[in-house]
Length: 286
View (cartoon, rainbow, N blue to C red):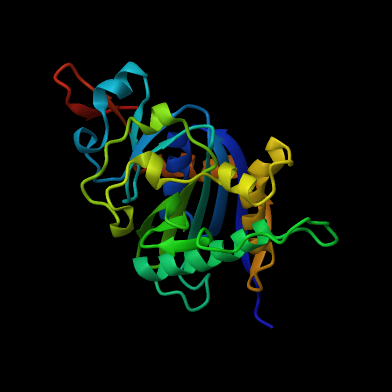
């Protein structure tokens, strides 16, 4: 019998997104342990760009300034997202070999994540043993799948992700839309580079929410707290049931301690941006 791999599991909520990303960066670059972080919502709505993202191309800058929505540039690639209290986050920070047979290439990691989340979503949709249901849950064109680099229900995206890979380690983090605020979503421009399946659709026509999906599958009678827990709880159960993993809960403070140690020697790549009078974006010095 192979020895199980210890996974540090952190469950938190309403964190500052910049702090969360900096903690993840430190865990990726400085820790040698395996981590999974789940965070439900952020304390303040924020626009998050990939490491090479350009605000003038991706954000309606004047509107963002008027609404006092800050911009943060994360340490990984990927697209631009606006996050708030209804965004749910799951991050895998793993060593090579933690997932048996997984090669550290972007597409391979995406495919693995699609399989992992597919099983979690299947568990989320399933009724608990002994539960009475008036009709079977629907399985049709609106089912979960991995489309290019997105997680979708049918043709609508509800989860986007970003990655970074080193020689022997990777981070794959995802933001899921439990719900969204249209006024905030409208702060994002339609990106020039889009997945083919988007077909130039607007944000409203392109995205779906977990909250609306739960209503479709007969979960509308659940309390708000229970609905918010459906996907996140299913992710935890999938980890706990994995044959190779030994999941142990640790505090966010324990993860943050790695950041404090890391910051003594390295300046984080995750930064807050500010716009000067000439509308040029600069990195805050904090």
